[in-house]
Image 1 (spheres, helix red, strand yellow):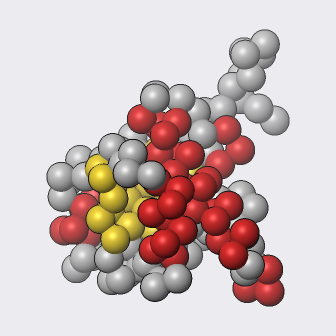
Image 2 (cartoon, one colour):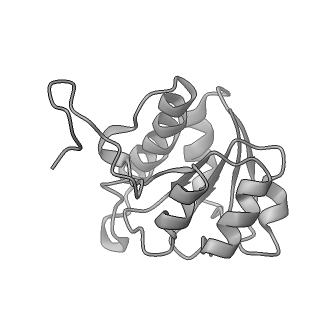
Length: 151
C-alpha cells in the first residue's frame, strides 16, 4: 500500500520504519495535513495523520479526489477528522485506540503505536476490518454471529 505520513516528528521515523519493515511504501513528511499540503497524497492509497492535522470535510474532499481510500490517525482522538465526510466519500478511518498520553510516551508505547498504525494498513490491504481501531462513521464493524453493528 502507498501512504503518506503527515506531521511526522523526528523521533517517530525510526519507530514507523521498524514497524513497517518495508511492507508499505510510506512517504514521511514533517508538514501537517491541510488544504495546501493535501497534494502530497496524490497517487497514494492512505494518509497517516496526527491529532493536530486538518482533516476537515474540505480536506477530505481533496483527498478523495486524489484517490485516498484510508485515513489512519496516530492518536486515540478523532475530533480532528470529519468522519461523516470520510464516510460520504467511502474513506475508511482508523485510530490508535491506546495511543499513549504525553506522560506515558515511552519508547515501548511509541513502538506499539507505530505497530498499530502499520497493522491498520496491513489489514486494509488484506481487505479486512481493523477491529477496535475502526473509527468509521458508518459503524461497519459486525460480529460474525450477529446481523448488526457491534454495540
